[in-house]
Structure formats: structure tokens, C-alpha cells
Image 1 (cartoon, rainbow, N blue to C red):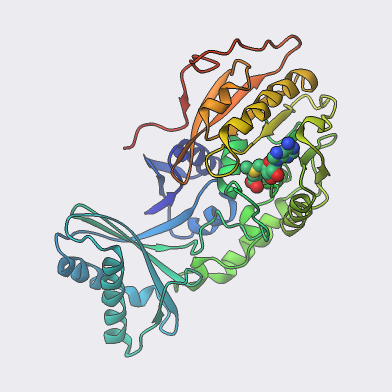
Image 2: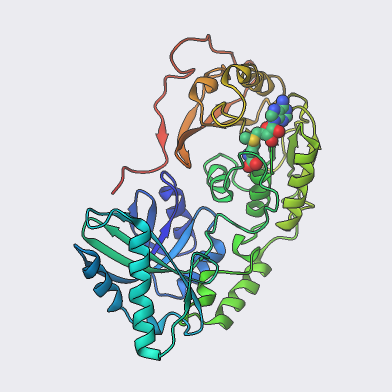
Length: 406
Ligand SMILES: C[S@@+](CC[C@H](N)C(=O)[O-])C[C@H]1O[C@@H](n2cnc3c(N)ncnc32)[C@H](O)[C@@H]1O
């Protein structure tokens, strides 16, 4: 069984991606999606999924009320069929049980069980340590349920490998993709991203628009350090994926990223080159109020969007200083973006009210432990500023992206 993990609220978006690849989603959890498919499907999933963090393959499922029972359960799994004798192994985990209060100890005990079994079966044991760039085992132990997985991604898929310069408060690549996949833009139409920082939204938009599989950007995956992987089949799928990408963006489409910090733009440009989309994303140094907004695209299937991820005043900047910025975003939408759909992604709902326009939709996302919103604004001739009040600028219900935890 395959479990694909992701942050809270993203499972419905991830499930749509998985189904579009032709697989059956058998269950959705608060932070992951189960897929009913053979092992070989992990190649395809690692290559193509844009919103997933890890693709895990389950090897064991047993009950354990004590560390000794956990050790025995782990030692019963045929690790000699999975981990190379001369390999390197790390154990990561999600632990929520009264049986143990020390995650490090649980990981150590799990690793001992694997290594002891391998030494007994083969007379040789792999090295072990914290690096997640080789064979990675994931231990899930909640209450008395233990599940053991091999992590076929290894380094999480949110680290695509193109971002050499993350900058300040960057969006994770997978979250940026999830945000874009939640907007009305569906791969055609302009994407304008003032305050672009490291350029993540623009780069992910280019990857989607050109049908570039994110897994073709980096070289290393956990699956390459697992014995059942057919490396020839993996390489073949990778070159097929490369052939499926389009040479350029759809006709007439622009992706435009701006930031007022020249150094940030230099770094974003380098990141875009690293992702292979250096020619597709246009960068400019300017205040966000001065961003050039292209004429509406003529492509009938295109939907033009302008999207901003301003500072929240929590980690960077100070809330009161940012009020004027959020007000100016509302002005920018009204003044220059008629016909576009505007989006603001923020972790500060007080500041979001300062945009002053009525949002047509609000979607919840999480970055680390900050609850964020993607706010959508239809910008039409005569969009009106909302009077300010203590209640949110729009009283509409939030639209969670997911069902409650299952
Ligand atoms: C939260 S960061 C954006 C992070 C970005 N989404 C990423 O993934 O890297 C906000 C960015 O807004 C830029 N910024 C702040 N005030 C600005 C202004 N007045 N005009 C243009 N850019 C501004 C900052 O330089 C910073 O790069």
C-alpha cells in the first residue's frame, strides 16, 4: 500500500493530482492520501506529483504497547529484501503513544531492530545516521498501532532541487504548487506575481504550464536506495516524462515576477534557471505598486491571475507598518488588474481585511504552524472598497481545502 503525505488541507488537491495520473485513491487522511497500486507506481508518483511531500510504501502493520514489542514487530519485517547490505539507513518517525515519550529513542530502537536483522541474515550491516539522502525508513507509532514504511522519496519532494537561494520566508515549492492549483488559472493565462521573493510561485507556474514533471529536476530519490527498484524502468519513465514537457509556454502567456529588492530578483532568476524555466519567467525590480500588468490574454482557455504573498507581520516586518501595504494591494487590483482574478496569500487575517475588497473565496492552508488563507478577489470595472469594520472584509464562510481528519 502506498501512502502519499502532504500538509494539512492539501489532501483533496493531492487526491485530484493522483487520480489525474490514473490511480485510485483508497482513503484520505488529515495529512495524506492512500493509493491502491503496485510498488512500481511510486516511480510515477515521485516524478509527477506537485503537492506531495513523501511517497511511502508500507511494509508492516502491527500492534505494539511497549518498545520491546515495537522492536520485535520491526525485526519481523524482511528488511534484507529492501535495504542494500552496504547501504546507509536513516529512520524518521511520527510518534504519538504513551508507550514512549522520546522520539529519538523510538527511532534508535527501530533502527537497531532493522540493523540486527540485517546482520543476522547477511553477516553485514548498513551504516546508519540522520542523513535522508539514501535508504529512509518511516516509523508511524500512534497509540498501539505501528506502521513501517520505506520512504521512496528520501529527501522530501518539497525540495525540488532548484532553489539554491531560498530568501526570506519562502513558500515551500509544494505549497506554491497547491496554491496555484487552487486558483482559477489552469495552466494558461497570465500569472503576475509582485513581491515574488525567491520566485517560487512563478517557477511552479512555469513548470505546470510547460507540463514539466517536478521529479525530473533533481537526481536523487529514496527509491534509488531500495533493492526492489528497477532502475532501468525508473530511468525510462524519467526520459519519457522529459519528452512530455512542452518546449515553451502556451502562446501569448506571460509569467511576470517582481520584487523591490534587486538581490532577491537576481537569486530568483538563478532559481528559475535551476528549474529549467529561466526563459519562461520574466523578472523585474520594482515596487509592487509599479508592476506592469499585461493586457488580458486572448487565449480562450486562459484565466489571468495576479497573486501576492506579502509579509505577515508575524515573522518579518511589523503588523502596523504593513497595513498600508495591504491597502495598496487592494488599490493595485482595482486600478490595474480589471478582468484578472486577484489572490492574496497571507497568515495574517487582520492585515487581509486592509485589502478592503470583498473576497469571493477563502481557502485555508498551513505553513509550518501558521494558519494561512488564500483570498480570491474578482476584479471588475468598479470593484468597490469595503467599509472597514471589526469583522472580516467579507463575512463569507472559509472554504477548507480538505475534509475533517479521518
Ligand atoms: C513573504 S516574501 C515572498 C516570498 C515568496 N512567495 C517566496 O516563495 O519566496 C515577501 C517579499 O515581498 C518583497 N517586498 C516587500 N515590500 C515590497 C514592496 N513594497 N514592493 C515590492 N516587493 C516588496 C520582499 O522583498 C519579499 O521578497
